[in-house]
Length: 157
Image (cartoon, rainbow, N blue to C red; front, side, top):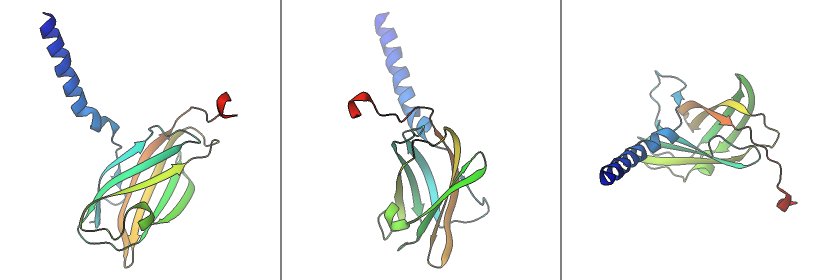
């Protein structure tokens, strides 16, 4: 009987590990569902999730393109409860290696949010553009900033 129970637990563990990547993925939507974007986003990961105030966070976006891209820019807009609160622009080549060849690639953006950032749900909109192409892609997704504090521990003082 113990053998059957152990085998059941191992099977259950294996099945749950198969679903782990889906639990960590962040849902996103394209800004215009009708547009045929040059860059197709395939997934988004946020680490840590939820984001911790005053600590580094990494936004990793997996994508693919059907044409080579030599450069461009990434415009990031952030909203809090529907109110636009922040915008920043980065060179596309700061977020990924350029030139971008046809096929799969990854954009990675690191950010440290100020310790006074209010906890809650935020929406990030990212638009990628290149010379002659106003929108390589445009996506939006939600992320959360946790309620944890960014107070230094006694050992840091």
